[in-house]
Image (cartoon, rainbow, N blue to C red):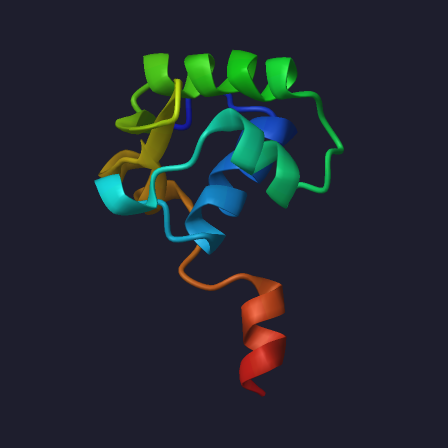
Length: 93
C-alpha cells in the first residue's frame, strides 16, 4: 500500500504537492525541496529519501535544473496524499 513511508518522506511528498511539482516544468531539485522545508534537513538527507521514493514509484526524474535532476510526483504519490491539507482548509474558511 504505502511501502512503509516514514515522516520525512511524507513531508517531502507534501512539500512537492504544495509546489505543484507534477509535470516537467515544475520539477524540483533536492536543493529547492530543502529550501522549501526551511533547511530543516540537509540536501543529502533529502536526496537519500528522494531515491527511496523514486524506487517505490512515488517520484520520478523530471527536467534537469542546472546540473541537478529535478523530481516530480507520480500518480501513485498523488493518490496517497490528501486532497486538501489542514492549512489549505483554514485558508478557504
